[in-house]
Amino acid sequence: MERTVISGGLVVTASEEVEADVLVEGERVAALALRGGDTARSWADSGARTIDATGHYVVPGGVDGHTHMEMPFGGTYSADTFETGTRAAAWGGTTTIVDFAIQGRGQSVRAGVDAWMAKADGRCAIDYAFHAILSDVDESSLKEMDVLVDEGVTSFKLFMAYPGVFYSDDGQILRAMQRGASNGALTMVHAENGIAIDVLVEQALSEGRTDPRHHGEVRKALLESEATHRAIQLARVAGAPLYVVHVSAREAVEELARARDMGLNVFGETCPQYLFLSSDNLAEPGFEGAKYVCSTPLRPREHQEHLWRALRTNDLSVVSTDHCPFCFSGQKDLGVGDFSKIPNGMPGVEHRMDLLHQAVVEGRIDRRRWIEIACATPARMFGLYPSKGTISPGADADIVVYDPGAEQVLSAGTHHMNVDYSAYEGRRVTGRARTVLSRGRVVVDGGAYLGEAGHGRYVPRSTCQYLI
Image (cartoon, rainbow, N blue to C red):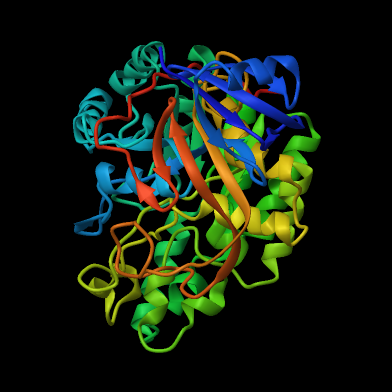
């Protein structure tokens, strides 16, 4: 069994920071030892491969609980395959993704899961798991939920948006939540009032308001908060835990905070685009704003401070990416002259860890909170902990040697995502993954990619480990 010692670094987890060496045996963490002690010296003298982490942080690999590789949307597919998307994730220090298997209308949930399993099989650079999107809630799909939970697909997403595509009405959402209350599944909800939004879209287009900026204007913050409130009440009726994805608006955060103050198992996720970008980007001249079309939409800049505060207070518990990239040329431009036809989604899987570290540099969060919201909590939320999300004996050796002083400029010219623009073009950040291990194997090191498609494994998940 191959032995690796990561020495000289500051080990940072969600719970502690300690100057320690890490011993990896095979695919798992075997032990930690205080630097300079007899145990650490014995490892160094044992002939094990040594990775020098002096001056670096040693952190768990990131867990991105919300990605969409090869996702069909608006007559096209998201531009990253499981091969290109997971490779880009590894470059950025993320070592596990949880993607979404889609139940097609009129099809079984199982058929969707099997289709996504086939897409990912033998192609992923890092480990992966799946949520399931419920498009048809009926007796058959509810029974399938029970079976899938037993098999390790333990969270199910429903949409209050996109009528005619993914939309579920309140009765369907309630029934799915009730099933989750009985079988242990976590219900994930895209909380926007899609019926009302469609009215506003139709009105905007009829008045000639067709530019990308109007995408954000019609998807009003009040319609996000209204749907968030409604989802919370449905979850209360069902007695089920609730996870609200990609929260973007102050008003929605207030709904989550009230629910959590009542002691409810209600959790919120936000994404880097809502923390670092704004509706100003949607209003960029010409058609440039299309690059930033996603749902929920980017909000005015004043919402950002409320999101950061909620991350500090845990009213928002996770930062995922909602990585769903569409190229500016050939995909986003399907919506020239009609913002409603712009594919909704943005690239981000490669930059989440670095952008959040920039927040550490700027004093918005501390180092342990960085690891908590990017690694530990998503692992616990989605039943992957402690194999993922921490550095402790027995955990998978998903480890990042992170250079906190490295400066970089984010750009489409240097990123590894399969998309022709960067949402953060020209942004300077401090911090970068230098060496990335996935289950003990070095997949990125010093600017070189050493991984391969097929190294990543499918990981069945337990039920949510983060309930109050």
